Amino acid sequence: MQRKTIWTTVLIIGILISSFSCKTTVDKRKDIECHYINESNKDITIKVFYKTETGYVDSIYSLPNGGNLSQKTDLMFGSVSDLIVNGDSVTVKFGNEKISKFTPTTPSPFNILDLNNYQHTETSEYRDTYKYTFTNDDYQHADDL
Image (cartoon, rainbow, N blue to C red; front, top):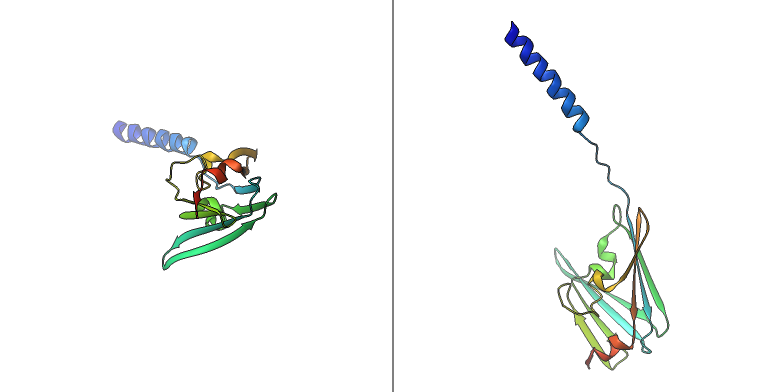
């Protein structure tokens, strides 16, 4: 009888410990904003390639001299492929003069697929903002066409 009482006590203690130690994890909504500013003195065309199950999809963005481009996605409900920074490869063309090509692993301070090259601001618990400014240095480090 005493063995049954000990096991019952151990069982109750185990249940109580597990109920207090379990935490409910709730997915929080997270918005990501990316801003691109063109201060390179050239019109820029950005062509992004995203790998899909059936091949590649590309998106083309125009960024005129002095212009800007903003992208936003909700990571809970949106598609991350809508963001340039989530591309599988990208080409950045400066007018008809120069071009840069990057993959996410290309080591370069001008790689727009590397979030480390962006200015990051956590605007709230639920929103991160990233800003990349194209400058004359981006143009100078691009390859001639």
